[in-house]
Length: 110
Length: 117
Image 1 (tube, each protein chain N blue to C red):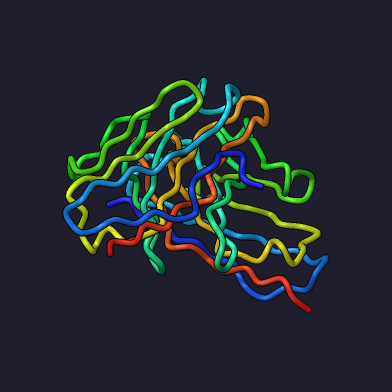
Image 2: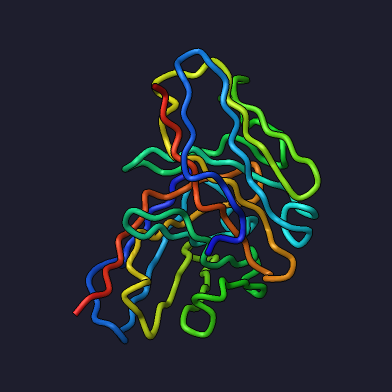
């Protein structure tokens, strides 16, 4: 259903580290920059990572992005309860000539 | 301050039409790609469409191609999404976004479109 594949949910304890994967193909992640968003219900999504691993100003260095081949990963260290949200990866797809998102991953901080 | 304010959402019957608007301010509107992204209730974000700053290059998701038309009026700093032949599955909050794939991102607060009889 979604061109990019993310795990539906991840969880970890406060202070721990978590990674969220985003799997695609050569027509999207493999040849285009990946971005990551944090989305809290009732608010506009917040950009966490752009161009695979760049953080916008104001985003804590607890958030990091990486990419290898046709997969990308968002890392969050020092988890806080305020990090509980839905996280989305996205990129451009050359074959579709359209943008694509992953299905989203719900992060629970136990 | 960058501001994007969507309007035009509401309740429409299946097969009907609706035109969304997004009033932009606080930046040089014509310099940016502009986007529409939607989120159905309880579902994830879905990329819908984008338009180049000059208004001539557009792209659409397969799910809306042939039914939706994106356009812009750079003189009035306004982005539009004309939605025709609406279906129940088009029910969603529609967000107007500046530079989604770049680093100068800004999102509107969204406008709700409900397609139901």
